[in-house]
Length: 372
Ligand code: NAI
Ligand code: MG
Image (cartoon, rainbow, N blue to C red):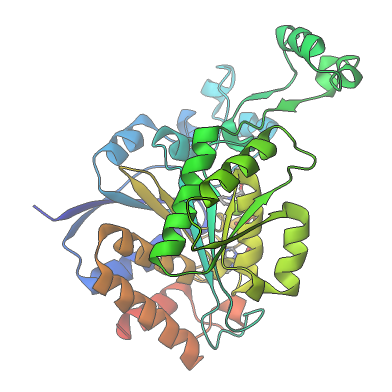
């Protein structure tokens, strides 16, 4: 029996292209692993009314870790329209399978390193090396949403919230409610993970992201909890920043930042910004980490316009494989992959379209595999 069981979940669009590239890397490192492909994504929503079928949930319960490509998500009306006719009248509602997976398996830590590898023509500035800790299960992604809001909710909010009066006069089909739910325990564990990482990796500072001056209840709780956690780490510098100001400061002086910890939505936004500063979405890798399971992925989506063309950059996914090996404790293999990626970037001889070249997805993966 192999030492590891690894699920490969390509999903939709370029998720398939980049997982084919990842397989080239897995084959090269000769990890003692069994790879099992699983179904996820838009096509399964259309054909069976479930983008995250039970068989895939069962698969994830039986593997050590998984590599996920990307999925396509569409708004409510488009999702209904694309269901096969036999399913259209069943009242099914679409929810992103990756968001469901993060919640179902309590993959609370979304780890997103953003490092400018020397020589990358797409680096905003050389030397950027940021690590984002994004809370991954709560906040505006909690999935507690209403459109139109039910009467019981309108009545309850009318009794308990003064600002709600302005909205309650509207006909229910004229407004929607999405709840931002942040818990003390959820905030505590993500902030603690960020500080523990800072200590182990000998990093100097943790920045707490919020908008507590306006979103007083949920972001207020996140900030207050984070500051309490920070007291246990006097050896690490701490500061905090409003999400809007932070986007400006990050562009102005990225070297003032080191580790960034944020609630779910702000973390999502900041990680695309930081990915762009270090090469773009073709370089952004991500780990969804829980206490039992971890699922690794590129941060990008399914980029439908490039689907099946094997032209997008596989480096984000290959760096996600590197993160997986770190998590499995296969440090030497992780270093081997990262060194090869860094060497190929530094050589500057092979570039995918985003880097200004013509190399295909699999050409890039093969070049990296040859350097290992
Ligand atoms: P996207 O990330 O799929 O693509 C945006 C653009 O970034 C692309 O058009 C392309 O120019 C560039 N890009 C992305 N990946 C690249 C790569 N590997 N190499 C080079 N360039 C790359 O975001 P978009 O277009 O907003 O969303 C497309 C679909 O993906 C939507 O249905 C969205 O819901 C879904 N999505 C899924 C995610 C996931 O599976 N975790 C994350 C983000 C979006
Ligand atoms: Mg995102």
